[in-house]
Image (cartoon, rainbow, N blue to C red; front, side):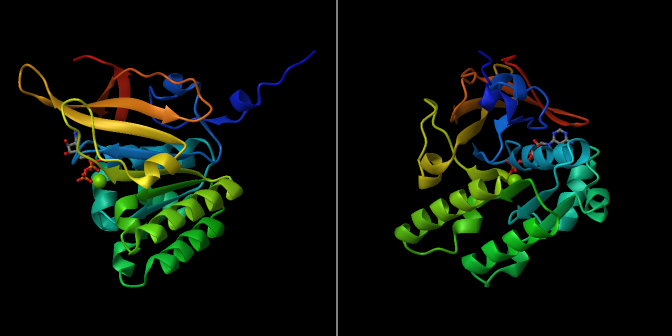
Length: 236
Ligand SMILES: Nc1ncnc2c1ncn2[C@@H]1O[C@H](COP(=O)(O)OP(=O)(O)OP(=O)(O)O)[C@@H](O)[C@H]1O
Ligand SMILES: [Mg+2]
């Protein structure tokens, strides 16, 4: 009898060097991953690489919605790694949205803007940097939870693979506050900064959860290279 391994078949590479082997070859289409980490741990660069490589080499158009950096400085900063965002934009493979600039229009209209942008370029991927800022338009806790589930279900239905960032600080034991998004997300990728014996600040990476995937659970090193970031075996 021929047995199909469907979960294996539908894996989509992340576009982050060194990450796919840790998660059985990639994400499942429609996965919603939360990228949590402290200040300056590489969340924005990671997110950019996630959409840039997919749009460039996998024919997966992507929407990148930012609250954190204006688009001009984002483009300039990403050029340091050779990510030519403007070129992908002009080929309709990438749509950058500065949701901060639309401030005051409210969460539901921001969601509308996102959906229209994804429709326009037939996006297969979405980044929201950061989810914390994106959802800050909701007042009540109920709304927040409701919106999170609504966004989750919409992206699943459309088969959009998404990565959203959230700032979290970690105590030495690795503990942190937990939001509803952690429970809703299919996956949690965690970035933590730490200090080496030689007093150098570095970032380590770990997959905290990924539904339907027997993933690696050990810390790895996140390193900055001229081509972006890579995940390597932990080097202390
Ligand atoms: N060209 C570079 N080479 C090496 N490291 C770099 C380079 N550019 C940025 N970095 C490192 O990446 C960090 C910023 O990365 P990024 O903006 O992705 O972090 P972040 O987690 O999104 O930060 P924030 O919390 O401010 O949103 C810098 O603080 C710096 O340590
Ligand atoms: Mg950032």
